[in-house]
Structures are given as structure tokens and as C-alpha cells.
Length: 162
Image (tube, rainbow, N blue to C red; front, side, top):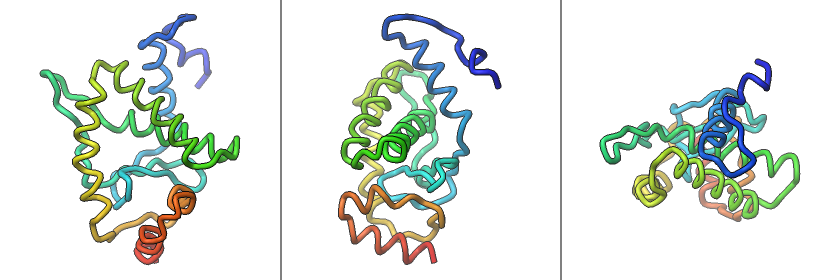
């Protein structure tokens, strides 16, 4: 696909339509899998070609009479984070902060409040973190867990991936 074809809207200002074009373009560049158990809700493959979203997370959020797909927001976060880790060699905590802001702006730009979105994420975060990991992709990038010194989850992930 030609890059120019992905640009449907233009603006020199911060614009929700331009951001929506970016989110759509990001989603076209990766495969999304909902088939695995992923601590912290979402992650990415070592080669950045697959975004993994925990299989227990709902796929949509109903809010004010509209259904919002959650995957595009998570994909935005994970791609930005992975690019900052791999290309600029940032520490996970810094990459995560920038990615979280991109995710937040994508959520708001789609017409959903960050609070409503976070309510769903927080409701699923703890149960996902505490679940018995039965299905873990063998190519899940473990950098976030290593950078956070989250050895308990690292051990659970490596055991389940075997």
C-alpha cells in the first residue's frame, strides 16, 4: 500500500481524524492475536509483527450507546512502546509512558472517555495478572517484565511457554 493512500485527513494542528488515520495505519501493519494469556493485558512478539491481547479481555466496550473495539487502542500502545524500545533503546518505563499517552489520545479521539476505558482495563488487569498462565506465545517479548524486575511473572511466563 502506498503511504499517501493512508492519509485521509490532513491538519497542522492536533486532530482526532488524523490520529484515527494513524491508528488505522498501525493496525494494518501487525497481526493481532486474542489466543493467549498475556500478563498486563497486552504485549508484542519479539519481531514486532504480532500484538497479543489477553484472551479474557472483552473485545468491545459499550459506552453511551456505542460499541468501541478495544484492540486498536492497545495496538497503538504496543506498537509505539515496542518501536521506542527497539529503535531508540529506551527503558521500558519511558517507552511505556509515551505509549500510554498515545493510547489515551487514541481513546479520546475515538469519542470514548479515558475513565470509561480505564475502568474496563483495570477491571481485567488484576485477574489477568493472577490467572494461571495456560497459553503463552513462544515469541512474546519479555523486555517489559525484565525491565520491571517482575521475576514472578517472568518465571510463570517461561514455564508456561515451554
